[in-house]
Image 1 (cartoon, rainbow, N blue to C red):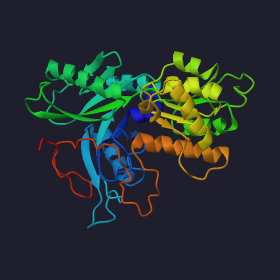
Image 2 (image 1 turned 30 degrees about the vertical axis):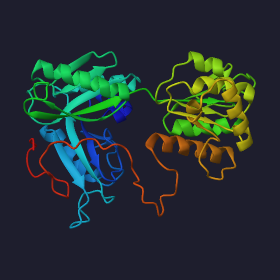
Image 3 (image 1 turned 180 degrees about the vertical axis):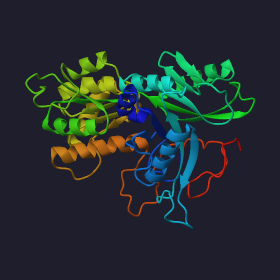
Image 4 (image 1 turned 135 degrees about the horizontal axis):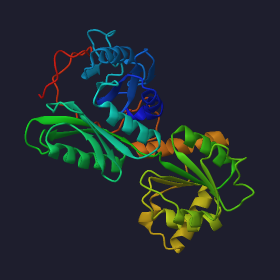
Length: 394
């Protein structure tokens, strides 16, 4: 539910009763990842999506039912060869969806509300909920903060809450959403529980060095992809709000100096568009030693070769140099700033997801390469998607 925290936080804050459907696990060519959510209020208004349209209608009805009876339910949806018109995924994938009522009288509501508020403020937070297996009668949800503190619980053995909190914090540190299997007493012993951990972390950073026309287009597409975008250039006449109205931050400073004092992490992408050795060499010498996700530099092939030699002379090793994506972007034969920005963004996505960058037409590679979360240990569901009985360990 943290995926739609902004709007859902407003709903809950106004006292609305809601039911939230969350993707717990996926298999095959599923359109959405674990954590994707759809919420429905008592008036029938819906926000979010769990499948991009394939099973939204069926999930919507499950949410309406949960609002009426107050019961959580786990459902599996997949493609049915025998009934192509049944609620299923025509792409051939399988998704498990957890539907949870969050009504005023439900004990889970205070914890869910706190998690939604934290995520809506842009704070790091993880929400853990039991998907399947025995548990106590109480809250059945646990909110973990970045410092490891937590609130709520599962109403069972105290060690269970502490163990799940520790596991959820590890998920949060990695910015990961998925499931874990754990015993009902917080160890690997006892009846197994399947726990969904949703992580909400601040948006990743994109830092664009070089306030040129190509940077303006890259800022727009970076925002579209969900990055917090900074533009940095030492030339105050170019690094202006008028030229980059959509940037989250504009910095006038030498690029290498700014990089040395700003915060980056394993999700940060650095796009060097200056293609000027005065800026590029000291900047890339620092950048290539940082634990960031992507480093790309613009320039012709001649510029690339010259820059590499200058970096070697500056002490950059071959192993460090191998991290550099240069010339930046995929081969789209791009000409305009917008086309070039698309080329760069496509390379960033391919690099993050393990894509090849080749056309999918005629390719034998899988369309989706994200790690598949463990399947909940529940009884099998019919291919059409409706469960055949109460949830229980397999």
